[in-house]
Length: 510
Figure 1 (cartoon, rainbow, N blue to C red):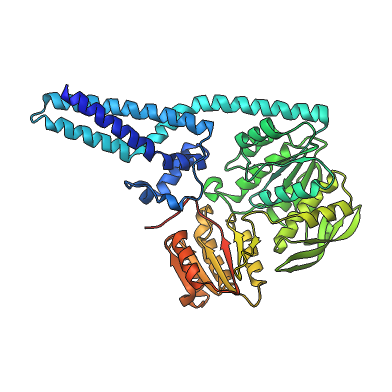
Figure 2: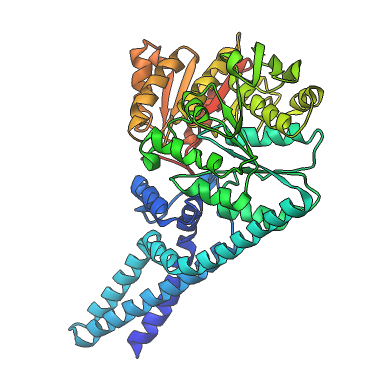
């Protein structure tokens, strides 16, 4: 009797400890879109972080766990799995307790088993998530079908137009820019933040898309072939934009050709009377445009004689940009924007192309462009009033965008220029080489370089070194907390700091 009372009391205490310990793994699983393969990949890359008694410092948490209905259901399932493991531990240790001499051996085994369950909670969660998958798939399918039917009804009864946007990068910026420009004359429903998955979009459609809206803007994200098609089948786009194609998420796609095939699923989903819009300056997107037989619009700033929508007479500064917008069939008009960098003119042209398709005139488009505000974490200039300027480009992790941000940093003449970066991630086999190359580019742009993560940033460090940069101005830090502390000591009036890219929640190297 003593053994079972001891096991029950200790088991209850252990259960409470398991419940507390699982929050961080739940957060990482949520950020992995509840996909066990992505979650296991995160575990593999963060073994030092998970194989410890205390997972992390909560003060460094950047993307906290959101207690959605799905998380609550998964937590209940996980509690049930933990109870099963506790029962198994009691059965095993009770057998040992009854046959062993001395009996204390059974108690020791019980404590060890409870501890093993505690330590490997991040692994136990994989089992819980697998058990929950069938029910969650059923629930998700119901939301998906409901949203799909709502889009069909609004198209049929209210002539709703759907704009689909995809690309390796630039799609979220184009989404928010398009929302502002189109809203000059149309009633638009945009999707928040980086909502680009079937479930995220289903939620917006079911709960927020109202019958009076004339345009619905959907961003389509993917990590592998077939995922764009799944989202496109949901939102049923009339207009599709491919913003850019480049080496992102290469650990998933493996090749640029796979990325091109996946992004083109949006164009393949358009109806016969739909319109495809392409960034003709991008070499990979250009190839996709050239093979497209649907009605199409090509936009860009190079080879304007080949373009339908273009920008010329471009002037960029630390205050934004000025350019002449041209649309074949409509004419040209002067435009101005507070957005930084030449690459943002490309994003503005994408929005102008959609506006043209939907019947807006040049004056309306130009006025809309003038109202566009910086997109959060995407070359967003922040002036906190301390004399130190911040360029927030934390959501950028591709070679093209990185170089564009460095070009913007160069424009701040007379400032002491800092860059804070962990480098680029998810570039697959290209990652080391691309980070090395960008190190040489940083050498031409920044006065001080703060590298977050000593191991990860070694290719950048070598690139700086080989470019004969003053290495006394290079600092390799363990994590963002250390970096912020150093910046507080170094910064003074007249500094500008570029935060280029970010890593998943509280990345740290030990």
